[in-house]
Amino acid sequence: AKVIRELAKDSAVLVVEHDLATLDFLADRIHVLYGVPGVYGIVSAAYGTRVGVNAFLDGYLKTENMRVRPEALDFASTKQRGSAKKEIYLEWENLEKKLGDFKLSIGAGSVLKGEVIGIFGANGLGKTTFAKILAGELKSDKGEITKSVKISYKPQYIKADGDGTVSELLSSEVNIFAEDFKAMILKPLGIEKLLERKVSELSGGELQAVAIALCLGRKADLYLLDEPSAFLDAEKRLAAGRAIRKFCEAHECSALIIDHDLLFLSYLADRAIVFTGESSVRGAAEQMELQTGFNKFLREVDITFRRDPQTMRPRANKPGSQKDLEQKAEGKYFSVE
Image (tube, rainbow, N blue to C red):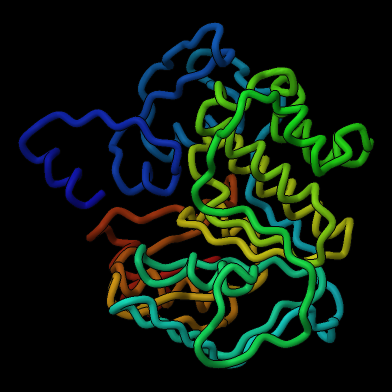
């Protein structure tokens, strides 16, 4: 994003992007595209970045007097705060793993019943390796995992193998006719209209939605999803976050979410595991409170975020802006005030 903004000093730059935080950082003006997927699309007039993103989330374009979505999308927290003393579902103690020249060390941590934990950090620091250790696909060299639970794992990379339909794929492991599964997963993720499509013909976003549904449809205590927001548009990201959140609360299960979309994680997660280090050389992970984790990560990349008062979404401040400089001076790289 910083490199692209540099290009704009000498050239006009047009960016198509689903990550709203990246748009905040990049864009000076935005156009909203709306319509019916696969049928028609309309490009709106130009808006200032904040006004345009908020209009998109609200679902109403004032300039055009056009309702583009029946309901607004907001980032107001839906998290249910329970008792401070919750059952520990999973614990690990100082895990270490060496893969070739890469070394990973993971500090002690835990997952509580009904909790969603966001895992983030730069690429090549071992996030997926950690997921595979918890899922039992890799064995750690040192440390131990206690309180073993049944885990359902959605990998980072999804393959569309075979000629079967979405219905056949899901039915192999999930009761797709269960009312709660249809209401909580299939409908919000837009999968009902995909059931008779061949898996091999799905787009990246459609395949991602099906993979999320397949993961959540299995009987498990802990759901481990590696980059579930990849390929999803902004609306589907919020729908996926809401579905995962409601699913965990309704079934009193837990989830670990590895992702790069900070808006997605801020909406979804209770606590954080932050990865730091040197890409492809060494990685270190530490568990902490969510806001502390965001502050730690954003300080490293030298970017500040604040809450938008209208939608409650975290907004990236323009580098060098008054708000950016104020928050850096106060050490508040992720301000929720």
